[in-house]
Length: 285
Ligand SMILES: C[S@@+](CC[C@H](N)C(=O)[O-])C[C@H]1O[C@@H](n2cnc3c(N)ncnc32)[C@H](O)[C@@H]1O
Image (cartoon, rainbow, N blue to C red; front, top):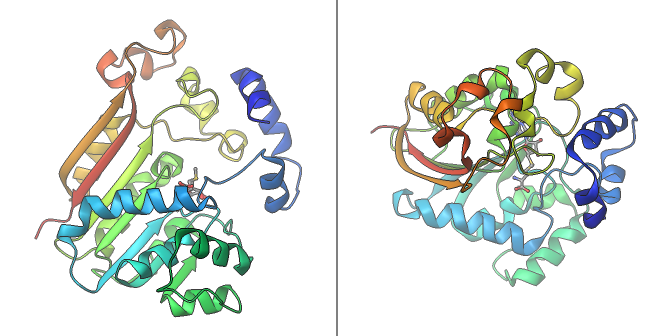
């Protein structure tokens, strides 16, 4: 399946995914077919690597009984277990849809594979798992964030999520994350700035009107196309201070600049060469 996906050109993926997104199969079936899926958190080693990567970056800033929020957990609620095992006393998992695996046996496998004896391996159901880890799963994106009390979340992290937040909601989402963190609260984000078609910049070929249309937004390949410096500007504008920014870059542009739409065509190479960014930010004390 992976080889087949690689062989399909980016333009055929756009057509194919737009067509498929009109077929109303249950999400679990799409995931099983490998056509639409929300990340890789069902893989225990991936989930552990992601959690530890963000946690290790920020642990020295965290109070003893910290509150954790994962934005966009995708296919799995593994962060409830991971967070509880690493001292989080209250955990929010906020996504834009109910995509997470609901079969509690999958989480018992994860605990067994990762050797997590400090968390109960025999939950009767997902509710019992969430209750025991003091975690809650909310699935209305920005609207869910708006329900969280101000200044309550010490540590926010997201992995391959910020690029999927709708362009029209990006600044409000950042402002909500800022609101729910106390002074000194910390956030760690990994952002994939490649297109989600061919790991290139094909998404930048399209006008904003077309790319931001309902058809494209619902298609499964949507990313907001914000570039690294634009994200940093918005995050700073809502009030965060930047503690660390690490960019991954291409050596040369992966696409001919002449095919890019405005405003991307006139952006400097330095900006377009950034294909991924790790950002650690803090709400000023
Ligand atoms: C590529 S998946 C990544 C999932 C997971 N973090 C991982 O690394 O496997 C992107 C996730 O971001 C979620 N997402 C998109 N917009 C969001 C929003 N405004 N608020 C919360 N989650 C959002 C999607 O629903 C999806 O679960």
